Length: 265
Image (cartoon, rainbow, N blue to C red; front, side, top):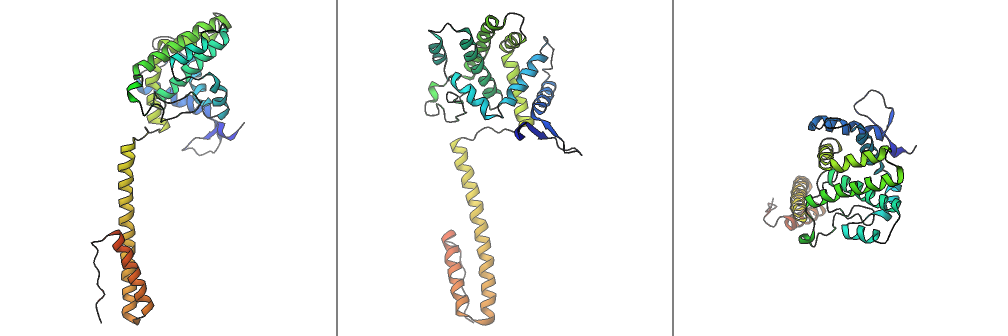
């Protein structure tokens, strides 16, 4: 089994590798308890837990994204256009189910309904230049609920009414917003995923970091100039004096207000 399918649980005395699926399931169950949306509260949905944990675990593997790529579409119109002339129930099932799965994860885990998934990978810049054309979050939730409902309908044609997957898809459609709340809690408490900073936030953060770095460099060069000055006082070496002048010039480039005069001794 590939290394990415295992993890080490900390803190524990042993260093045994555990399947990552167990990590996803553990976090999911804790999130359900902590949000009060416990399993089997309104109806039996432990099967949904298994489905979601496997789905989250699948996102670890690049081959899962590659297999999903042909079925993904960003907009309803693209999905409906691709299916308008098709009578293949399996194709319709895969299209609706795959897009619903990616909506569930992009909304619940990444907190970004505008993730551009048409090429099979998240694209945080999707539609960023046309915010007035973005569907609302409620619209995305409605899409997810509808996609799972269609996937449920076509799964019955493919698998029959007694297949477990059909029941899971129906429950995901009915409780789509509930499962989003569970995943949102899981995102913040267990996956430590942070919301992507806006360009303005990044700009201000860079300014703060750059200013901090500038001040640190100035302090280091001030210490350097004092060391050179003490050395020059002892030996009056011309090379040391030239080094002092060089460091002084570097400091004044960073801080034009800095003043330091070498006294004549």
